[in-house]
Image (cartoon, rainbow, N blue to C red; front, top):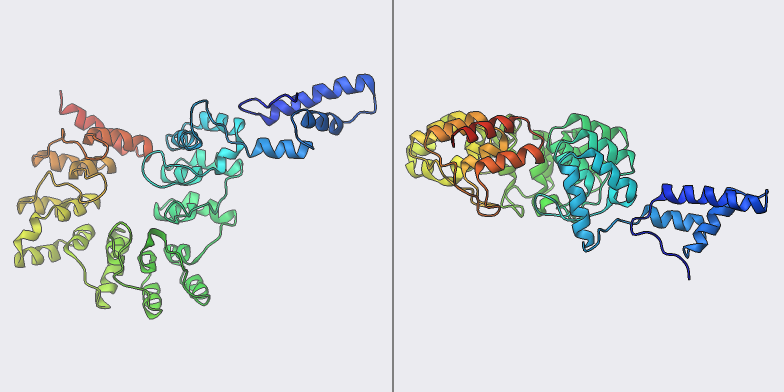
Length: 386
């Protein structure tokens, strides 16, 4: 009966075994070669050649006893997201195929790969290790709303990781070219037509980052109002870009696209907000308005909205339905956190999905997003309980 491979086959162990076998073979036949020993080892384990055995080990994903493949990959992604590089390295030593496995996200929905998680959590050292171990720079993205590693690096304004992917020859499609603001490349790629698959299942216009690109896409019939799976129209997505989005939102308005009060709140346009509220005072008291301003770190707008009677404990209308204070804590925005607390925000409230407090969100965000500013937020929120 052939022996079976260990639960966690290790190629380095097999190589050492083959060298030991070579010594045994040469004791009988001095002309024996390493290839002879490797072939003999492979056949003992039921493989016709060393190449087949090597390929099996390199593509085998370690599964801990009692865990499914999804549970194994999710546990690995958690190590990646938390920046536990020594454990990530050890896991890859044991199962090299983990570098490109697709599995459940460790912190939220979707099924990414390790490289996606490393970029999202701003773990440059883990990012480099994954590339060194053969991570696919283009990603397998169909189960992650078609967001590629390069899109994530661009969206998060991480120039170092973005440029490293570009240096390694990552593919640049129309969506990436739009996000990069590369009008010349956009013009060239549009000659090949519009893509059939759009990330987030919304409008391609949401990814435009120049006024020229906006005009080119509208001329091609791209929808200006189609909402994505998260309920965001292109103008909503652009308003979330902060200062970068002001000119884009204004250009869409000039092209006849209506903006909502939430868009102006995200952009911090206090003068427009004042005009809107003068005509309809109820706008200032809509939860979606103050949460939009908090999400985008618009302190002056939030302060003014609170003076107009906005709900300091307003909850997000989607996702985990955390409060405005949850959002500020996640962002590591201590100024916003203090503003909300001083206005009467309740730090003991829990979100509806994770059942956690704003302090808990700050602690999680510190690990998940590698944002050191969350430490100050957590310290301040803890001080309130003493």
